[in-house]
Image (cartoon, rainbow, N blue to C red; front, side, top):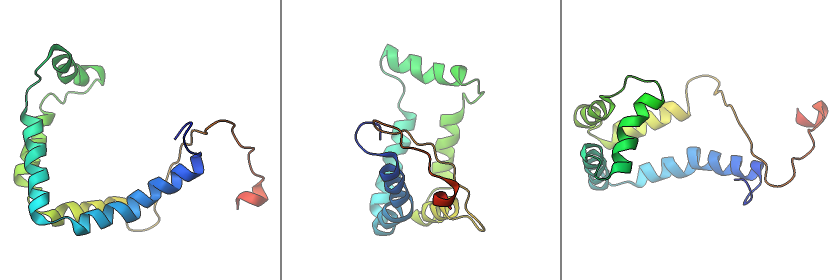
Length: 126
């Protein structure tokens, strides 16, 4: 978005990602690949910061966001170990989050590339 594509095109691309591309990716994802992704992500969560900049970011984020989630990574590892053991859970959760029961609510913030278009009249927007 920004200077490369117009806001409406980007909105359509995001919708396609949420409702077509990601469900298709999850459908085709082999169980072995899912387990590999899961193990890799777990290892990434357990890896300590190696450089000063990484250490600063690692410990400063909870302070900066005013959260008391200094155990967040431990909780995420616990979730991977105890809850997210099969691809089916991920597929079901994705579906539940993107397609809730009842009317789906949506908030869109558009950043326009170049010139901001004129606001459509009430008749044109309905």
